[in-house]
View (tube, helix red, strand yellow):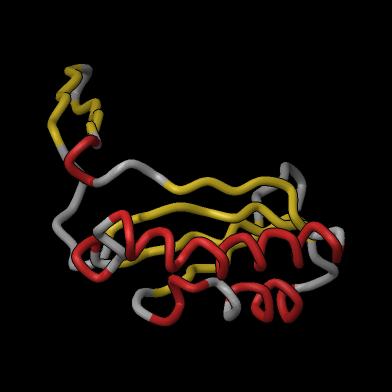
Length: 116
């Protein structure tokens, strides 16, 4: 079953400087390599800061485009891993290894498939 592991964090809690990002990089690389070696990794990516986001809403046939996220939150969607696991328990074990879990949260959701 495919799961998406959505990483949420307060952008101010994430590594900001180039030095902080370089210091965090080995943990991310190790996790990705571990997932690939286990055969569960399908894709992953971080997202640009929330300041770069644009939200589209269509209400009563009218399109409204605004800067930023749909709702005000303390944590923003920062990235994702797409994995294929045997079950939810396995997906949860991978989610707890994601560095974002130490300063934000990781939402684990199965991908929707028609007829399921």
